[in-house]
Amino acid sequence: MGGPAGTRADGHGDVVPSPAPLLEVGRIVKPHGLRGDVIVTLSTNREERVAAGSVLTTDDGRELHVLRSSRHQGRFIVTFEGIDDIDDAEGARGVRLSAPAIHDPEALWVHELIGARVEDTGGRVLGTVEGVEANPASDLLVLDSGALIPLRFVVANEPGVRVTVEVPDGLLDLP
Image 1: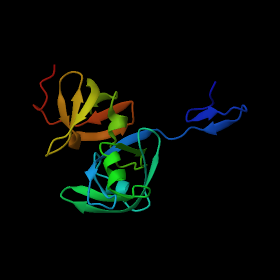
Image 2: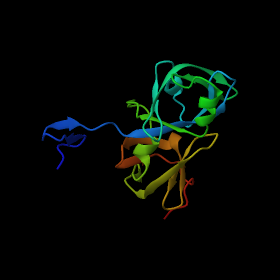
Image 3: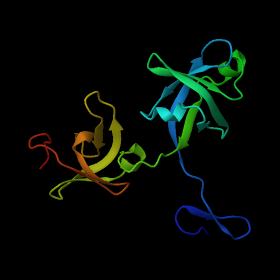
Image 4: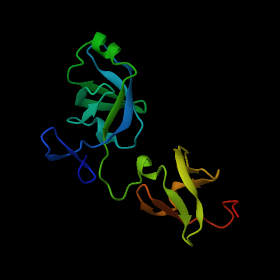
């Protein structure tokens, strides 16, 4: 048995905080040079994920400490502690990088939108969020009803529960 949400019992019956769930934030694409630097593509707009001092976790639970990074052609050249040469960098090719969610009350997080009920400001249920699709003008909520709603129309969010949108008349073809 566990304790309150966000806790777990240790082997001695004490309740301890559960580790924060990890979100995929990027991927190591390929080596860059001979000294162990790698090219990282972020799947987030939070560039601090690859800032010096950041810690990212691989699928096998290994922690990679960022020593330095710089923008390069829409991606990042990153130096991780322990990836010291071309062979290490080649071995990291394709590795997914994860990190705990960043607390930012102003941000909309995909993991908090998925499964939420979408309502308009009048309380009409428009569907449930199945995904978020990248779009140059505005990312789109993908609803189980087939509707696509630009994120810029989100006016309120109760993470994992309800998203309220203010959609201009005629944008959605729903009854």
